[in-house]
Length: 475
Ligand code: GLU
Image 1 (tube, helix red, strand yellow):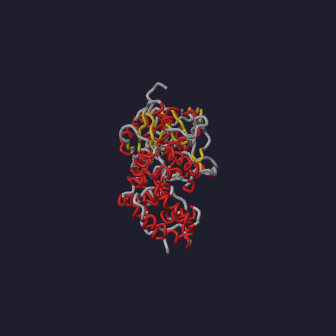
Image 2 (cartoon, rainbow, N blue to C red; image 1 turned 120 degrees about the horizontal axis):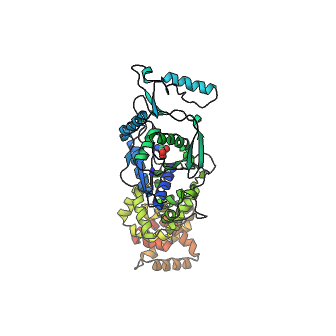
Image 3 (cartoon, protein in one colour; image 1 turned 90 degrees about the vertical axis):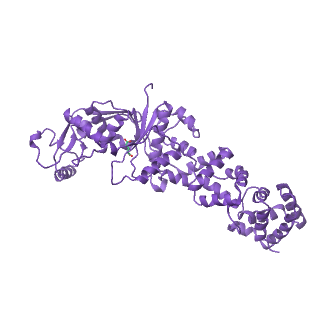
């Protein structure tokens, strides 16, 4: 493609940036980037009752977090109503639109009749050819498209193929309501044209709209952009995606501790594929993306798969980068702000950095990473998990008392010195190393599993370690 590609993401700000919207944005973004083009952002805020500032903020925030940047300033659709009316004037002047004075009651009658006859509801065209002199006084008109009644409208879709809709199935749609407000169908066409959009990439639920919009383009004498209607996203059980499946806003994925790069990778695979590649960088996705490789069947969203992929990203992210991401993410994670405050207070950020290589091996999400680091975050006396509690038998607690005395005597607080002390005591007491090391772990971390216990002793430092051991020791 040699033309200058312009795509757009056009969310309606009636809710958050849900996973389907994020995937649509990603495909527009990948397509534009892969061809050196631009992706624009248009906020379709014409539904005044349902559009909110909060949703607009959440959408911008969600896109930014996902790393999907747009070119230029966002365009707000509602602000362009005058321009939409201008386009209608043009169609009226060209005889491609007409004033319709049908009342709400008449329209209702058309609907019930259609229903009774088992046809889809449609406007019967009663004002299509009536002269303006018939216009009832004092009644405002809606303006309808004078749509072709014969032949067919063709959408040459880059994903769905050639879609042919007989024109007799498409009625004269309203362009401007009788209160003068533009309809969604009109606004999309005028905005896409004015924004220079070359490719419209959106969910397949808009395919019928594509035929209607094509008729509006033709009435305006404008070139129709290329269209790509991408398959919907279903849950792993094949049913339409619902909250139960993870049809949540982008911010929910941030709160669940997913990395934006992992989510981008995962979303790219929802409907698009490049051979058998499952794990790839965003750069590779840009290089490989071809809209013709988007399939037609519904994609399946699987939270467990996303978690596994995220785990892979966590493990392969360099430690310093992962630490920076964790720091930036803590404000959004459950208990995160509190954890950040504790790490600041205790000065244990460096200890966390040291423990990170081990912790990230066991964590699929940032939330799990924080959980693994709880021993660095929680304050004394530690709450013990039941499995840890079970390790702390009377004998074990007695051993811990002795161990505390030994450790007290260490002059150089290091992993090797601590290890020597623990081994020596286990030997003297005639127990296996584990019989001492496991209760020690329970006392220091409140858990049965943790990073290497001698590293934990070093990470916590002398005073805190001894405090935690004495909290559990009994002589
Ligand atoms: N605002 C529409 C939506 O959120 C998208 C319209 C379009 O992409 O043409 O579903």
